[in-house]
Image 1: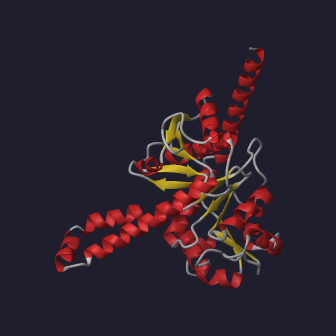
Image 2 (image 1 turned 135 degrees about the horizontal axis):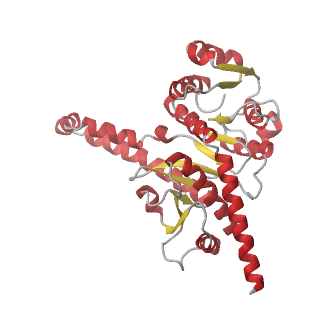
Length: 340
């Protein structure tokens, strides 16, 4: 029921996802009177779906604490997350209020063993293809241990999304030199350098390395990550606006646009955030996907597909195994230091 468009985008998006992932099944939580008419337009989806009715929906402008008080155990968002907790669903996907979704997921599903703070991970288009970037705003600030947790969780996601055995991981910093940066980032770097695991630690990366695709996984804390995300989205829209203005400035420009239209269409596809929609809430005992609130049906389908793959290829098991390996390495390092 959330997002800018509610069922008018969510239901067609699910229909597109079903075409691409025909083994999917859907449970729609929300106002049945609002959902059912859209579902009637997609017979194949209707046959693979059920509706759980509730009159309560979290509003996009609700504060997370307010949404929790008013909608706990009755809102469509809480019920969707609860279905994951109870094993009725493998994935919860929402385009609704981000803060409320994160709070409800953390409270209902709880954090995984060994995870101090959850993180929001997004798939970021780059010059080389795509990268996983986290945290995009689930928590503000992080110490060295927490940044390492983010690296482990992000690499588990990257192994699924990119089908690579050992993803490369970089820590976002103000420079690539080892002496630069705040102590928390330096501490995380020292830990990642010392432990051989299911990832390859690349070193520090700077802001422009995100777009270059220098590494498979970029790790930072939520304040910086959210600013980077909003800056990139704003820059993409600005470039698109500049191109539109330039192409309509004269008849020569219009003619040039017609001749180069296939190239411009390809560029527009690369810049369209709907094609890389679907952030993953990592570190809780369940798969929860956050879709952009203003996305279209194509974008919501992309978010559903991300969730499908996270469940199919056992994201939680990969994260748990990575964290256990890290903990064993940390314990052995502590024992060695004590003996010396």
